[in-house]
Length: 256
Ligand code: F6R
Image (tube, rainbow, N blue to C red; front, side, top):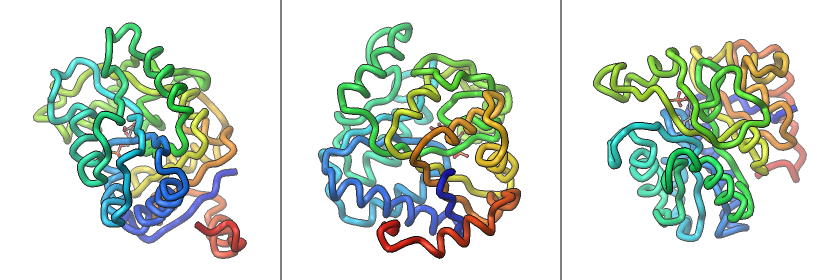
């Protein structure tokens, strides 16, 4: 079972996720981070940026990227990562990869897997969750064994992400994303979710059946998962009281 931490709000969640990343980077200055984009991880990056840590040797692998946006498009995940993560954390831009950033798109998935392997694997993968249950852009029906590849976005995800574009027609139809199998190989998963709109999908992912229809349920197979949710996102969790009790009664060595 994942460790589930129920917090007041996204700011508190960002501090806890930042604690986990700080501990990793203090012990391993060239740690490998898996980077999510979207709204959810913003408080984590903000909290980390204030801690004065040296991230110059940290390596990063973004979870996903749109296919079909021109280079430098402000909503490409390369641009978003540069703006929201590389800048505030003072990462070394050359050490941060985004799927599809080299070579032809047909072979970009295999190249990305090889680059992750060459880096020694991802130490800590930050994840958000979409309302379809996707992590990365692994939409429903994604194989639990899938690796980095091109996927078609669902209409729901395109509608959800239309807020970042002038119109829904401008949201790309395709993406390249780490697979569920790629995500499972990371050594520690930190999954964040905020707001009532994520409550049902979080409950399904953590407490429902393991199913490709809800791709994030794959986290139930991972040996080390920290889920950090605010009260509204936790509102459908059947075992919420147990999660609170377990967090309050952490043993000294379990605390960051
Ligand atoms: C982003 C990603 C997606 C988002 C998810 C939630 O790199 O892989 O899975 O984490 O769509 O998006 P937000 O955080 O905007 O609600």
